[in-house]
Amino acid sequence: MALFTERLHEAGKDIWKKMLSHEFLQMTYKQEISDEVFAQWVRQDYIFVREAIPFIAFITGRAPLTLRSQLANIIGMLVKELGMFEEMAEEHGISLENINPAPTCHAYMQYLYSTANICPIEESFTVLYAAEKAYYDSWKTVKENLKAESKWQRFIDYWSSEDFEAYVKWIASELNKLAEGLPEDRLKKMEEHYITTGRYEYIFWSMAQTSEKWPV
Image (cartoon, rainbow, N blue to C red; front, top):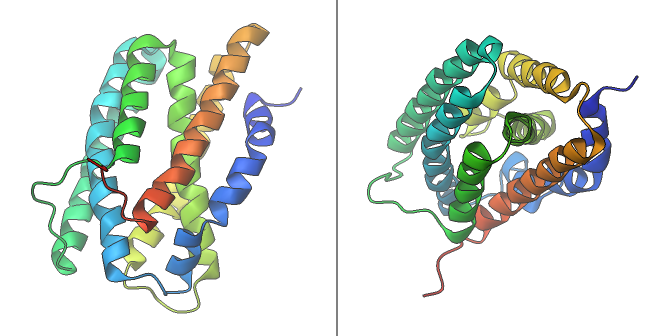
């Protein structure tokens, strides 16, 4: 029997193809991206990672006991990521003071909050899987296409590392367990969340590339 994550990958393959060929990623591995465009991503993703901590906290409280300790460990990992952002921002002269989410970042955060608070654990866990898989796949694509070391190498190495790959595989394994025996209507909802999360990940790159701002 095929694993549920294989079904998700098939459902989202067109989105993933577009995501991994996004111009932001291409400019990054070609080292043609401007410092200000990359700084926009740094600021927005710093906000997103910061707000992902309550998302994990919410789903930890609703998760099966067997998952809680492992989910709680993710909060420590996210705190480590925030430290990496802060150190890289200081190194490259990027201010993280008084920053606010752009429209896409704001909408994506609200999506995280709503799934964590309203949806069954298997649905919010699907969102976690899709978001982390998107990051691993995206930064692995950047790393595989780099011709020389990047000034942003620390970010690239972190999210394309074997440790991060193992983390994503762990989420996949647990998601497959959560999907076992669920009726088709609930599996379909999980598939919809995978696709929606992939779409948010794609437009997050676009948000950074265009330095998206609130129009009013």
